Structure formats: C-alpha cells, structure tokens
Image 1: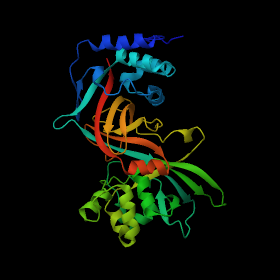
Image 2: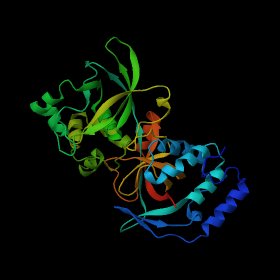
Image 3: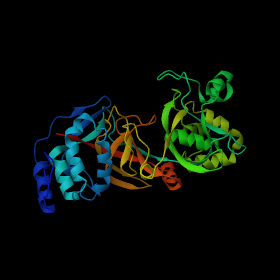
Image 4: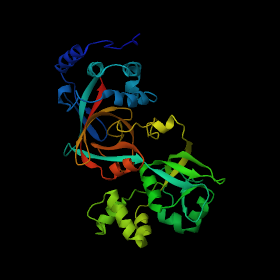
Length: 360
C-alpha cells in the first residue's frame, strides 16, 4: 500500500512523462543563497540526460541518506523508500512533483567547477611492527583538541615530545609511507592485517581526526619543484620510484596527518563504502563529497561532467566532504575501492556542472 503523500503509485511511463512536461511549465521560484553559492532555479528540461539515467542505482544511495536526512527531506523519506521499487518514469515524475532543480553557481565568477574522484584503498598491514612493516597508522592521541593545531607530519617523525605523545597509539603498520599518505588523503581504507598469531583478517580504518594542520598537496609541491608536469597519482608514484632519496621531503611538504579508528568489516559492510561526513555508507558512483557551505549533506544533486576519464550525467547524493573540497561548484566523486578504483581516481580531473534538487 502506498505511503501517505506518495504522489504517483502506479503511473504508466507516458503519463509520468506528461506530468513532467506539465509541471515544468509552472512559474520558477526565487534563487536561494547559500554561504558559498547561489542556487538559480531552472526547468527540469535543462538537466542533461535526465531521461537516460539508471535512477534505481542512485535510489539506493538516497535511501541511505534517509538514515540521517537533512531536515528539508525528512517528510519525503517515506516516499523515497517506497519509490526504490518503482520504475524510472515513476521516480522522475515524483521528483518533478516534489522537488525543484537549481543550478549551483558561485557567488561570483564562472559557473563551471571541478570534479575529482576518491576511493577506498585496499592495503596489506601488520598488527605488529616488523622489518617490512615500519610505517605506523595512529588512533587519535590523547590531548588532541579539535581546531587547535597539533604537531606537523615532520614534527611527528622528528620531535621527541611528539613521538612520546604517539607512543602506544599505533593501530597497525604499513610497508610503504606513500601508501600511508594515500590512505590519509582518501580518509579511509580496507586493511588486510596480519595478526600476531599469523592469522589474517580484513578491517576498515575510518577517519577519526586530523592534526589540524593545513593540507599540502604533494602533487602541487612536485609541480613547483619542476619535478613533474602532470601531478596525477600515476606520475607521482613513478617519480617516487625514481627518487627514493626525496620521498621524505615530499611527504613533509604536507603538514596534515589523519588519525583513524578501526571498524569491523562485515559481509554487508563490505558491499558499501565507508561512512561519509553525513554519517551514512557511501555508494560507488552515486556518492559525492561537497563543500557543505555550498550544498548541505543529504541533498540529491544532478551531476554533469565530460572529460578524458568518463562522461557523467547522473543523480548523485551529497554525503561527504574533504579538506580539499572547497567552493561552490566543487565535488569529489566516490568510485569504490581497490586498485582499479585507485587508478581511476588518480587520473580524474574534469569540468563540472551541478544542479541541486530541493524540496518545493
């Protein structure tokens, strides 16, 4: 039985498309201002590729957002759950009746933005320090205070007082310091950890805190050094392999360090990404990180990006954030986990347009 407020429980496809055309002729509301962006109302017909997206894939992510919905979407979540079994035409018709698309624009300047991608690394680790595993990953150290700068990455590795504060806070150990940096930049990862008894298990390390130091891009540092012309991760890793004597210098160019918490990884959890800043599990290809001063968490977003890696015209959910994700038209696209996802994320840098879909 349809839930209260469910607008189109069984509309045929042609009827749903007709409803969309009819609703699109209604007067447009006023723009909406956010701290870092302006939302300009548009017609549904201006959203590229709306009729072609596999909306059921996005609906799984949208149902996840309803676990911790933005207040504006609370009343819509019963419908959203019911519509997870509806046709794409019914889903589009309901969206047109309940939501209004707004083009996301900066308060000044060009409307096109930047889309990058991120992923969840899968790495080998050891619970105990061993000759081949010498790079520690830490839990939050005692005395760390939010929004108060702590020791930098370099100080953590060189100052006795920093090392004393970190002693006993090691969660596990990696073999490669660059892998540790990648894990910290991505914010979480899946670790195949060898326990002291020799057994192996897979766990997730999730973001817990930072040392509250500014983020420094190692790619930007390499470009400024004249070491690279292309700051993609494949190029960075190639430079690292050719310049092992300068790796520490490169790592210290980023003062920020991330601390983690360990989480069990059940079979169910393994089918989703880590929890984003919204507090819900991320869905590959349907979750994005945004600047929350431009787009609130839990907001459905129509995303369009064309570039050398992929062509995207799809519904996604704003469910995460990141230290480098700042500005009105800026997003990080979650592509999944493992080596293939890492290869995609490492090459991903494309123009971006976004439309938020906001309740009427």
